Every structure is written in C-alpha cells, then in structure tokens.
Length: 250
Image (cartoon, rainbow, N blue to C red; front, side):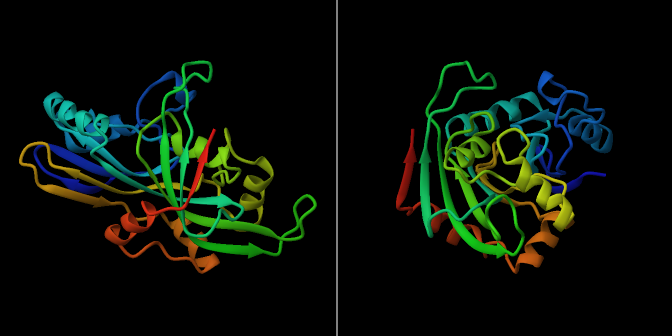
C-alpha cells in the first residue's frame, strides 16, 4: 500500500518510495511496477499525474482525481507557484550557508536546447568519515536542502553534479566509487534525494497546502548514523535557502 499524505475529492498526495517508477515511459527501462497503477488499484476511480519524480527519488508526489484538477495543478507548476524542497546527501562540503546554482539545462535529451534553470540550496550538516577512498584517507559528505525554481529534467541531480557535489546513489550523474562505499559500509542502496515538502494552493478553493513526506527507514538510519536531523520547518528553511551568497553559473 502506498503511503497517503493528503487526500480529498480533488487531489491526493503520496509518499513515493525510492526505486518505484511513476508511470510507463522509455526512460524507466525494465520497470515492472508503476506507482500510478498501484494508486489506481488502491483508491479506485480516475487518477492523473500532476507532476513527476525520478524513479530513484522518493517523496511527495501529487495526483489529481480529474483532468481539470490536473490541468490546474500543472498551471501552478508551470507558473512556478509551487514551492519545492528536497533533502539530498552529497559528496564533499559545499560552502557554508546558502547558494544558488544558475545553469541552463537541456531536456531529457542532452542534445536538446538548453533552458534557464535555477536551484537554491542550503548546507544543513556535514560529516567526515574515516574511510579511505582513492588518495583521501577520509571522506566528506553533506546534507543539503535544495529548492528548485524550475522543474527541468533531473535538475537537482544535474545541478549538484555541476558544482562537483553529486548526490550519493546517483548512477547517472554521481560518483560510482562513493555510491559503492555507501552500499558496502552503510548498507544504503538508494539514491539519497527526497522530495521533502511541497507548498501550493488548493486548485478548487485556494486554500494554502503544505505537504511533507517523512523519510524512509534507510534514509533516516543514515541521518541518525551521521548525527544529522532534518531542518525544523518550512518557514525557516525558506528564509535560509533564499538568502544565499554564492551563485554558480555556467
């Protein structure tokens, strides 16, 4: 059963598990299970995707119960009126405080035209572990809050790789040696990117909604091992993430 975070007659929010493909597409390869099918069986009736998450990413996913609501939610996403906050564990230590990555990205095809893309981030916590890898006797990792303004294909993953702090567990844009280290020493076999919070306006009555998805056991266990805790609340996270100093561009 999928974990329902919010539900009414117009929309549903679920906590998407890492590794579960959202729907059938050429990008998901040999997936045998799809979230949209499971949710249709679980709820009954019509379900329509309002946005998407990568197969390897966990967290808040919005589902509309009608095409009209899906269109209204899509307008909010396209108009950048939905506030999105992700938690990511990355290689290395970005500069303390907050920053902005301003780097144009292509679509699902790397050869396609590049379009404007901006991601705010805040460094929340750091750790140094005594494990040798390559020429370094110890490895540094950080917990980030990432808040994308736009919604380009794999935007956060590509942006963090662009500033040389790739997400741990990212097979396409990350570092295989560090991904293997997490599997071997920490028993972590998932990509450490989680859609933690969404803030939007209800499409039917304009009520403000803030939906938060708890971390799964594997992600929580890693944070506990490193002595890390998620940020305390959305208001404080918003203020910190949008008063950043460093800007990274192409």
